[in-house]
Image 1 (cartoon, helix red, strand yellow):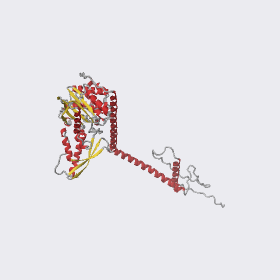
Image 2: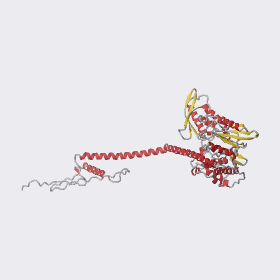
Image 3: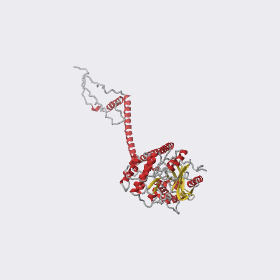
Image 4: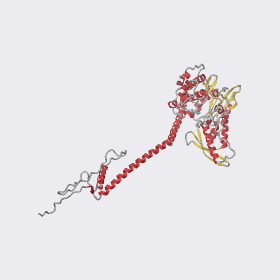
Length: 575
C-alpha cells in the first residue's frame, strides 16, 4: 500500500493558535465533592463558547502535567478537612480562576496539549502520537530502508505535529528526524500542487536552508525527513537546552537568562534575513520564523520547516500579529517574527508583551534601533520595514558572509502561480481576523467608557441641565396659557379697545378735563431661549398687548384721580 493511501485524519479547519479563555461561572456540590462549571471561549466571539464541568481532581491532574515546565503556578493547595464549607469553596473558586488566568495568558502553556485537552476535550481528545505512528508505519511499507529508533516526545510546540528519531538500515550510525503533521486551516493548494510543492523541498539548495532528505504529502497530512542535529536549534543555544527534551521543559523557565554575544547577533541576524529575502524573491510563502525553526550548524543558521506554509499550519506568533492591522502580508509577518527572534537573541528571553514601550540596555544601540523599527508602538501603527531595509541598517550592513554554497530552488511557473493564490488566501484570512478583532476592541472600549464613573457623572450633569431647561420652557408655556385664558374671560363682558386708537374721555361743557389713566407698563423682554424664533410672531405680539391693556384696566384705582370742583350753570337763573 502506498504511503497514506487511506488517511486516518482529515483536514483540520480549527486554528490551534486561537486563544482560549475560561471563566468559572458557578460551583455545585454533588455526592461529597465539588464541581466547577466553566465557560470556555475561543477567540473573541461569544458564540464560539461552551461549558465544561471540572472537579478539583481534574485541576490537580492538569497541574501535575504542567510541572515539567518548572514554572511556579498559583495552584490552590489541597484541604482534607472542611473542604465542603461554603466559604472555603468560594475561596477555592477564586484561586482556581486565578490559576486558569495564568495558564491561558502564558503563550507556551496556552498552546500545549494538556491545557487544550482540559479546556476543549471535544476537539483535542485524539491521540495524535498513535495517528502519526500509523501513518509512519504505512510509509515504511513502501520505503523499507527506513527504521524508527524512538519517538521524540513533545519536542515541538504543535499538538498535531509529531517527531521520530530515524535511521537508515544500511547506515545505522546516521540519525535522522522525521516529522509528521496534519494539514491546517490555511491549506489552499490543491492536493496535486501540494504534493508537487512538498517534493520540491528536497531539491532546494541554499547555504541558510536546512537540507531535506525526503518529503511527501497526501490529501490529509505530510511527512518530512531531515538529518538530526545533536546541537539543536538557535533556541536551544539561547536557553542552554537539550534538543531531545520536551518543549515545556526547555523553554518555559530557563535556569539562566543570558543573550548572545554581539557578533553572534549580527551574524545570525544577517544570515536569517538573507534566506528570508531569498524566499520572498522566489514567491515562496513562509510566515513561520522563530528561534526553534532555525537550526545551528557551527556558526551558520539554517532555516527549518519550509513545508509549514504549504500545509496551511498557523504561525507560532499568530496571536501577536493578528492584533495589528498593519501586519497584513506574509512578508510583514516574517519581519515581525524576526523582531521576536532578535529580541530573544539579545536578551535571552521573549518580550513580556508586544508592542514594547521601552527596551532594556543592549550590547549595542544599533540592536535597539532595529528592535524599535519592528516592535515599538510606532512600528505597529506605521507598518513593518522591509527585509531589504533591515539589511541596510548598521547592525547588519557590515557583516561579511563567507559561505559560497550555490543556491538552487527552481519552482515551475504553474506551481508559482498556485503559491501566489494560496499566499493571497492566507493573507485574506489574516486581514478578516484582524478586522474582527479591531471591531471587538472598539466595542469593548466604548462599553468600558460608557460604564466609567466619569462618563456617568457627565451624563448626570447633562440630564440635570436638560431637566432645568424643560422646566423653564414648561413654566413659560403655563404663563402664556394663563394670560390667554384671562384675555378670553374678560373679553366676554367688556370688549377691549385697541391701544393704538384710545377713546377720548367724556368732557362736560365748562368742566375741567379728566386726566387719562396711566399708560400700560412696558412689556418685559423675554429671556433668551434657543427655541424662540428670531422673527416676531404677529399673534404673539397682539396677545401680549391685549394682556398688558387688560392688566392696566384691572389695576386702575379711582382714588388716584385729582379732586375737581364743578360749577353747574345748567339751572335757570332768576334775577
